[in-house]
Length: 331
Image (tube, rainbow, N blue to C red; front, top):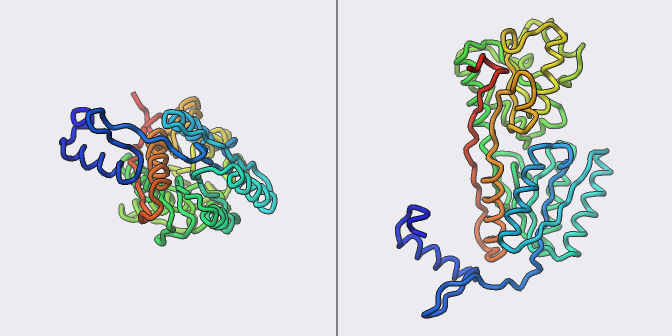
């Protein structure tokens, strides 16, 4: 193990001591070290609202299922489909009730990003914790930054990756950079909001102007709305979208208005899902390390089940920028 993970033998010994302390493994003199049999149900909950509509979270679901099987867990999927806030709230309560009924040992929860559902996020965690079920958050917290909840959190640094995009666009000569947003996804704890702040910080640091006109609250397929953006005075030469799906929908709208991509307008997304690679031109985007995020989140949950007294932990993983033809001619 020391050779495999490129650490010292002492580090491996300390790791096994910690696993023994948590009851995960047991050592038998003259025989070896073994994983202990769990007394729990072997079931975990995975609650990802709008999983069916978001490609990035379909990838998470697949990886969690694979990783869970390797460790002897079965994931019960909670997929809350779109609808009114009241309808979604009812669906959430039923799903949480089902998790408790099935005696799941822990839940991985990606909070709602719709600002109308912020109260639901807190109620979900409160109800599960009251039932003795630990929760690990995926992608974002349930409280407004810089505050932190008492839950473990795994994701990427959205402000940093937003700034990475902004710095890149400035470096290739773009001077009128805008962020395309959806109002319901720009709540105080929204990752879209954090990404926008990162882009804004890079633009301002470069000595370029940033006003409320740089934030476009228009749907990407709204032809008249996008046309008005270019008639408003900003005339963006780069548009950053909250995710890849928004960017892929925006590009044909720009083409319909006679805007060439990337010559007239560069377009950037987030997540690096399949549509980013299938569109024309291919989309420049931030690559989310889905498998590593899933592995870290499951590791947090398993250790939290073994020792609920640990302080809340947070890990932010690197998310590289993938340059493609939507921002510059890529050879």
